[in-house]
Image 1 (cartoon, one colour):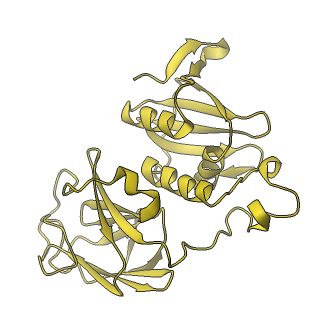
Image 2 (spheres, rainbow, N blue to C red; image 1 turned 180 degrees about the vertical axis):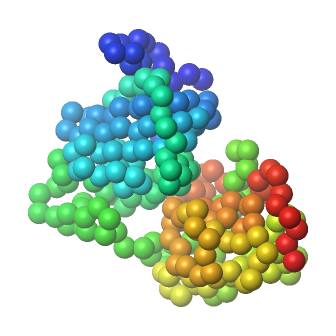
Length: 260
């Protein structure tokens, strides 16, 4: 499916009106499109820049927000109209933003009633109902189940993080067992303390990465990308992802050298 339906001035295409904004972004990602997607609802304005279907840049003009915050701000606009134009887009030196992580974070904030642009907020508060302003949202409450979603070629596997201690590794005794040679037998552990999730590498051969950075230990939150060896996962809130759940094992192609 092509997101373009009608040519407008300046090389722009009016995006398909029968698609919601998240559906349009998924269509661009699956089609590996390169170009700029402009979004406005008459009160707020923003844009996303894609290269080969991955978000490289994002900006909310109304708030002056960029990066992940800008992308979430754009996605949370209500009643938005969109248009797309193919243009050259450079790769972000810091790395692109995984589409699924951006969509999940926007879905979480929308479900909580967030309207991130000033003109979309009710009087008397930073967020809906006087909630905190953009960038100060509290972590997911403990009543919601945090999970890891492993992704590969549009197949997904979801694993709960409800235990006080979850070990991730290649060994079948691990709470989350990943049959990949790049994953060590006991690769990493995740400790849950109320709303806080702490990730620690267990001396793995190929390393543990959070949002592209190799870590020995780090706090993780919904929307974060984690890579164990060459197996990629995202932290999500289960209730917001259940409709998309699949159970197939998920591995990225091209294994690294075997873990220990």
